[in-house]
Each structure stands twice: as structure tokens, then as C-alpha cells.
Image 1 (cartoon, rainbow, N blue to C red):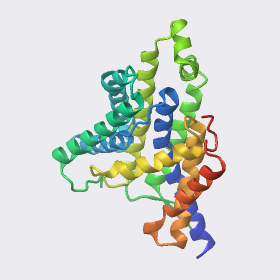
Image 2: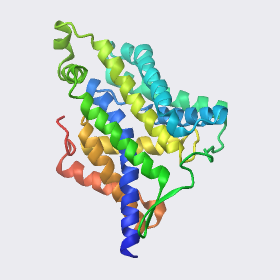
Image 3: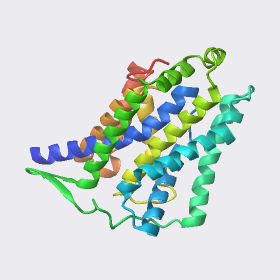
Length: 291
């Protein structure tokens, strides 16, 4: 096992970890804003990947050029989900948390079933893209260009999220998260903030879906594994913490990649859950959690 191989695997793990972090960012934003765990998060990732594949198949538009379009599409979808479903569940006072869980879980089952009905269970992929099949070499380290581009875009997404937190709207998001009843007294529309928050969370997972579609297979169940990793990243980084999602995504990606070097690749997620269990034992709130 050469140092060049270890370095290549580690960098690849970090780049993949950035994608995990983007998926987790959308999830932690929604939870941090209104204490709702979105169990349809993986299904939204799947929907974004299918949207990318359909647009590419219909128009030939390269996936990278679809980023604004699919992000806008998922933003609108997130707002619609909040308006049609989540806003009503938040009004329920008896067993409200269970209703929210069943609502988002049911939405996930519906979206996966709809994808199976429309597209079937066969795997799809985007074979002809600008980055497809290209590599970037640094001496003995050779990395797939789609993965490198995904890492760069993921960093830009987090930069945008951090900058958003410093804007007036970002402060309104933070205030609404702290005490939505108090902000209502000063004229802040809670439903508008929550709706936009859901839209931003869905847009983040939409961007991740476009990036994944560049080099990953597409199927109705593709979001399941990524959603599971996102839940671990959110718990590891701390519920509601965007910075925590970023750090946890990097830790998970690096751990997964290095674990695959020492055990069978099919067992590569063992390292992730071992770290997660250790964090639960010594810091149950996560690395940056306040809950």
C-alpha cells in the first residue's frame, strides 16, 4: 500500500465527504429551523438526479449547466411540500412529532413508488457529459474530474450558506429558530420563513443530486443510502449546525475511504458508525450541537 495510493484514496474520500455534507446541510437546516426530521430527504435527492437525467436526455444540456435550473426546481418543490403538507402538520398539537414523521416518511414512499412506476427499477446513468471520463493528475495521484468538480461546487454551496447566515434574511432564520412566537410579535411571517427554509434545504439536496448524476447510477432507491449517511452526519455534527454538517461530512467521507483500504469495500461504512457511536457516548449533542 503505497503513500500515493493512500493520498489518492484520502483526497477522494474528502471530495465525496463534501457531497455528503451538502446533502446533510439541507437536512440540518430544516431540522434546526423547525425541529422536523425530513424522512423524504433521500427521495428528493433521487428526484433531483432523475430530473438531471431527463433534462440531459431531452435537451443534451450538460449536468453542470443544469445546476441553477434543478436547484430552482427543488427549491419550488421544497416550498410546495411545506405549504401543502408540513404547515398543516405543525398545527397539530396531539402527537404532532409522530404526525410529522409519518407525513415525511409517507411522502418518501410515494416519491419512490412514483419513480418506480414512471422509470422502472433499472439503473440509469449519464454517459455523455463534459466531465465524464476525464481525470485530474497531481503527480502519482489521479482523481476523476467529476468528483473534483463536485467538491469545488460543494464548497461554494457552503460558502453561500455561511454568507446567507450574515444577511438580514439569515438573521430572521436564526431568530425564527430561536423563538418563532417572539418573532411573530414583531411582524415576521413564520410560514414565509419556514417555507423558504424548506426551499433552501431542498435546493441544497438538488445541487447534490445534479453533482452525483455526473458519475453515480440513478434508480428509485438511490437516495436511501445517501439519506442514511446524511442522518449520521447531522447527528455527528450536531442538529441544526451547518458548520457541523460540513465537518461531519468530511470526517465521514475520509473515514469511509480509508476503511475501504483495510477491510472489504462492502464493509466500508463500519468506520462511519464506529465514530458515530463514539460521539454518541462522549458527546450526544454532536460535535457542534446545542440541543
